[in-house]
Length: 335
Ligand code: HEM
Image 1 (cartoon, rainbow, N blue to C red):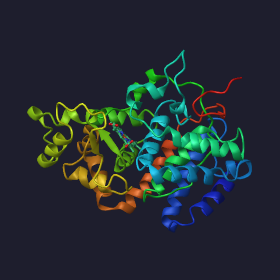
Image 2: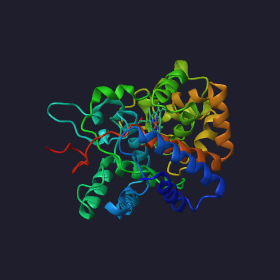
Image 3: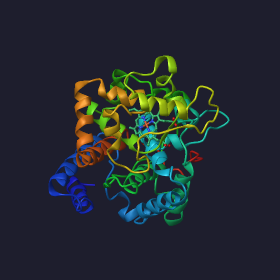
Image 4: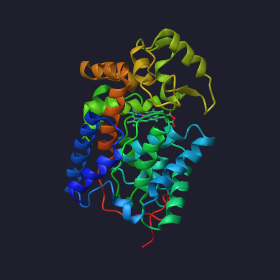
């Protein structure tokens, strides 16, 4: 698609935003588009307009329907998209099931707590019924993550589409995902290594405005003998109550912020208040530059929303592979 056409689509899709916000959005979409030119087929905003005009609506309906009975769905979809993009790019590799020959990403340790894959399956069934073999699983996940944010009270944005699904998914590669005890330097490297900035790290960590973490993800910070001094003492006590040392429940844990079903900027306010849940969240306060972004987003939800959209556009555009459109998101196609 020509750049002018991409811009025209952006104009209509972003009509709801203010002119300044809109201009920034256009610049980011254009940058993503240009970046992708060198990677074979470019993503575009109107890829499905002719090929499957009702695809986006079908994905949104599947997300909405699942959310009606399962409040954990938005967080799950947003995290799933992040884990997809950080391993082999946004190619739907996280959606593949393991086979008798190979353990897939899904079964790698950092992905053990991913869930709600059924929502992607439902969306895929819906789009296959409309236009078989056209809409990739990777695109479905990128769209579903956007819808999850928007339907939780966060911003919405036009998602460039046309991703292809990869044919490789290896549990061993999930060690590249940053873990909850990652230091600032490790987090920075994980993002820089994928062409994302330190600012993207702070903005996208704001995804922790949604959802939940199991005790194992923050147990290291609440040991009675060595409580992390960065934690507000009353918060550490509450977390220890939720996760006692003898806890055996695999469902135990804590919400990532105080309004964990709503996409807002409470995550940043809690972080400044000594109530950030993960060490990796806390790490954002250890460097003056990232601390300044945390303060900025804590003070202005509008700025957080605007920057989140820009960073999501960058992350969602990682590594457009020359793959296929899977018939079933859990399996590669038979050739
Ligand atoms: C910066 C590095 C990051 C680290 C180290 C990290 C780590 C984690 C960990 C350990 C959990 C809890 C898992 C569990 O105990 O079940 C979690 C949950 C979550 N993460 Fe991250 N994360 C990072 C970045 C991101 C990004 C970039 C996003 C999305 C933009 C994101 C979205 C989420 C969401 C929504 C949840 C809640 C999932 C649920 O409730 O099902 N995270 N993350």
